[in-house]
Image (cartoon, rainbow, N blue to C red; front, side):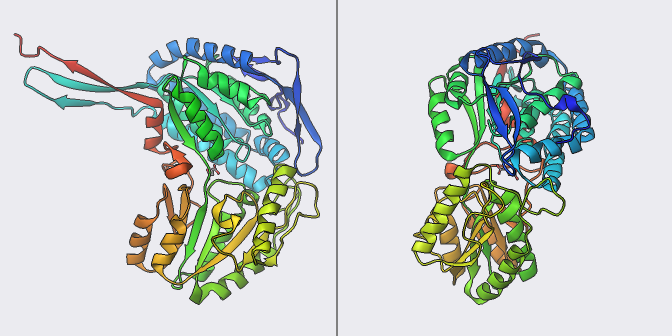
Amino acid sequence: MQLNDSGLLQTQGFIDGQWRSAMSGKTFEVINPATGALLAEVADMGAAETREAIEAAENAMQSWKALPAKARCDILERWFDLIIAAQEDLAQLMTAEQGKPLAEARGEVAYGAAYLKWFSEEGKRVYGDVIPQQSDRRGLVIKQPVGVVAAITPWNFPNAMITRKVAPALAVGCAVVLKPAAETPLSALALAELAKRAGLPDGLFNIVTGLDAPAIGGEMTGSKIVRKVTFTGSTPVGKLLMRQCADTVKRTSMELGGNAPVIIFDDADLELAVNGAIAAKYRNSGQTCICSNRLLVQAGIYDKFVEKFAEKVKAFNVGNGALDGTTHGPLITTKAVNDVHSKVLDAIDGGACVVTGGKPGAQGAHFYEPTVLTNVHSGMRVFREEIFGPVAPVFKFDTEAEAIAMANDTEFGLASYVYTENMGRIFRVSEALEYGMVGVNETAISSELIPFGGVKESGQGREGSKYGLNDYLETKYICLGGLNRA
Ligand code: SIN
């Protein structure tokens, strides 16, 4: 890792504007998943540091929320500028700790920064209402910051999943305590360094690094000071956090697992569909919540689709994301490799044909071959479970009704995609899909401009867009009476 700005490599937690080691003095290792090399030893904090961070956040929030929105938003804009200026270093850090190819890492840094820019603008538009009532009174509706926010973020997007929670929270006057994933804390800590340089007052953005997620998460969810928990990660962990938040009736935003279908009808533009399905399936080596999990292809186009799709997959250049020409990097851990492989073996046992791939990669312990499976059916784990790896099972269907039923046959409801040239079908299918997001003839659906989020067991709340502010705001009604007195 060659950073132009060595100040971006931080290894301590960040509490009340100070870099801090763990009270126990303990550290944990951050490993490059492509090479197995040790990148850093990071402070291994726990419940006590989390409590301190929450208290610092509560103090800092008092003057922050009283500032005019513009003053808060100006700081977010400066933070955005610094992130863009440091894009290359942040991408190097991300590729080293997460594994995604540098081009994808650069893209994520820009994507993450865009949330700061967007909310630095949108944060100035927190409007209320005046509600007409009887002649002597008016109802005022104002929006106020929800309070101290605890955020828990995943390793698959070590930058953007942080900014899309922290930017709206800070913009409306909240303070944040963040626990980044233990696999990828360096990107988070570099963001904190840049926030400090941007002039963000101490205590508003705190980072508790540590391996003991139950201790840190337990402190966050149990605290009476924390009023909101926002989480991106697996559905089982999301459910646990929601249960823990119930005792203090906290607000929650949950961006949880997905099982995205890509439905490709006979009338689709084949080239567009193949490219879209490839992008959605293999982005970040299949490790995104909105990755297509299931390719559902109509019978008339099925063979042609599989041929073209597999041809492109075979041309991938899998390897260390830091090297030129690498198109796809490793998985995050060997556990992830084993997990993906067990799903592929389950499919093979059930009669699936391996068109390409089908086993761990030769490049190292964290690699899995980009895989395409046919002759698959809904009884297999690759249909029912989130794969989170570079494996594309291609299912066959005959009718539109069958495709919709297959797509909705899951407890998940995050992203879904449809390829067709038929306008009526676009509306029918998009409206019938039980998902928070539908991409029509497009799979690159994410951006700061849109409401990202799911339904069913994929979560609740929306991130990004004007809707993303609501997750950090409370609505207060003020009844103004006695207006007819002279
Ligand atoms: C995710 O996988 O959780 C996020 C993907 C995205 O923002 O596009």
